[in-house]
Each structure stands twice: as structure tokens, then as C-alpha cells.
Length: 432
Image (tube, rainbow, N blue to C red):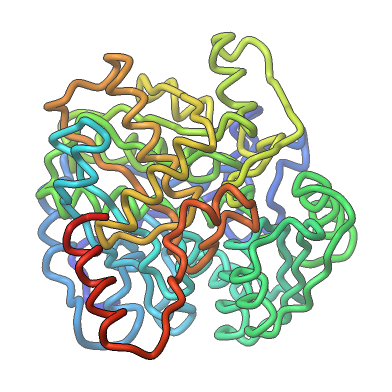
């Protein structure tokens, strides 16, 4: 980073279940005592908000080395204390915060803004976590990096591993990954294995591989992935001049992002960057909604399911970051909702015709806001940021689902005639 007046605090890893502490450079991604997930911890003295806001605003965005313009490493004090020479960055982040009247009207929320994470280098929010995760992999001298994926994680891992010069191994559920994501992963050179099973089976395998084969696991159970993903929140807050919105809506699958958002909001409030904590609206697809089912019981019972949804990026039946997700919802007085695939596809189509292309899983956040407005949970004049997690080109046809393809505007075949063009133009401008 550029020189900073704020000294990065000491960090360590700590088990969220039993409190066991590990060194910052310990390569394990779960607690050796109880098996719980780890958090990256650092000291957060109160009253530093104004100083940090000045630091973040002063950092360059358009020139300099990648780590200097990164929308992740701009917030290094809140992410990782790595030296600039160790950082693996494209750069990433700096994604737009959009206002669009058509999409706002569709959701029924006049104060809606859209944070489009599909504008990251590989087309999804995963790049924010992966720049930190792969940087950590190099710091711990990992033999190779590994992940299970429904597509976005594998594409991001493959790209950042290639940039960092690390061998990458990827496990995906056979026949269940959108072709755009799969092609990205292979094009970046990752060894890609299609497992006869679902995502949860893939994740179980890579966790075993990390423990027994000495490879570094880079799914969202990795606490350094969470540190990078926190910057979605820091960046959108900075774009709002540090005025916290009423709600932040996001798709919820494996719950890494839900966990990251809760951690970011807690830290932002304790540091004085914001004066109140927005509520999280975690949105699941109805056919892959174990977290929503658990929420309906007050999280008294952890539910799992056999996931079935056109939103492939959140087609997960047993979220690995469940405990972290519960903590984030409780911390933010958040709500978990589930929306049907039809509503997701309608939201994707609305965003697309407004010029904001996103994959189906991203549109879950828009469908969730609409459902929350319809139920009276969110008021029409509330300030809401809906996070779109992946670009349209990631999964333009909903993982091959016929219903998703029908929602697209398909080509109209014509003869090579100006008259036919004139006819179609007339139909277009008249709205037919």
C-alpha cells in the first residue's frame, strides 16, 4: 500500500466455537481442538472512524500498482497486514453502486441502489475473497490451492492461482455447473475434476484433501476469504459517504458472504465508520433454502436439503458457513427469506432490460427485496442496497434450465431485406 499514518494492528485466528487461538500464518482453516470455523481477529480501538475514512478516501484509484487501486486492498487495515510485494491482485473491487428507476419500481422500493459485484475481474464477488485467500496461500507457502465450487469460486481461484503462480485443483458437481463458469476455470489452467455428486459432496472431499494432502483450502470456510469479502460492505458504505442504509440484501447459498457482511458491519460500527448497523436481508432460492427453514425455527434446528434451483451459484443444501451466517443475522437483526425460481428469473429479466445484466443467483436479492416490500417488512421509502454477485455472462440461461431460456429475448430470423428490418423496428418501437 501507499504510506499510511495508521499502523495495521496485530492479527490472529480464533475459533468462533471454543475461542482457541491460532497464529495468523497457521494454514489450517478449522479449529484443531473442536473443528469449528475460524475468524481472523484484530484489535479495533474505538474512535478511529474519521481517521480511517480520510485514509481510505485519499488512496489512489486510477493509477499505480494493482494493490494500490484495488477495492480490497484500499481497506488493508481491516483486511490483512501483508507487505505490498506479497499481494496477488488484478486489481479487483471498485464496483459501481447504481440507481435504476425501472428496477426500483419492479421491487417497489424507491430508495433501492444496486451494488454490481459482477464487474470484478472474473465476473463475480469471489475475486474480493480470492485476492486475500491466494495472498495468504503464498504467505503460508502452500503446495497447491483447492476448492469445491458451483462455478464462480472455481473461476476466481483458477485466475488468482495462475496470477500467483500456484497449482490449482478444482472439484465441481458433474453436470451442474454453468458452462461459462466451467470454461473460465479450465481456461485459467486449473485441474478441474467433475465429481458424481452435489456441491456438498465436493466440499466434503476438498476439506478432507486439505487435512490429509497438505493443500490449502480456499472455499469460504477459509477465514481470509471472508476478510476480502468484507470489503463489499466497506466500499458500498464509502460510496454512500458512510451513511448506513436501512437494509443490505444479498443472495445466500454457502453463507460466506452473509458471514462476511455481518463481520464487516460489526467492525465498521465498532470503529466508528458508521453510527448504526443496517439490517441484512439474506435471500435464498425456495428450492435451496435450508438457512431460511432454520431461520423459521429461530435457528433452534439446523436444516439441510437436497438443493434444486435454476440459480446455480446458490444451489447448496448444507451451507458450510451456517454458524457464521446465524451470527450475522442475529448481529444485524436480519431476516432470511426464500423466493421461487419464477421470481428470480423475473428479477433477472427486469435487471437485464434495464441494462444491468446479472446471473440468476444475483437476481435473488432483487426478488427478495420485492417480496419483503410486498410483505411490509421493507418500506417503500427505506434505503436499500441490493448486491448482485455475478455477471450475466456467468450463467445466461440459468444453468441450462428451459424455463430460464424462455425468459430471454431470442433472435428473430428474417430474410436479408430492409423491409423486414423496418417491420421489426416498428414492432420494437411500438412495444409489440
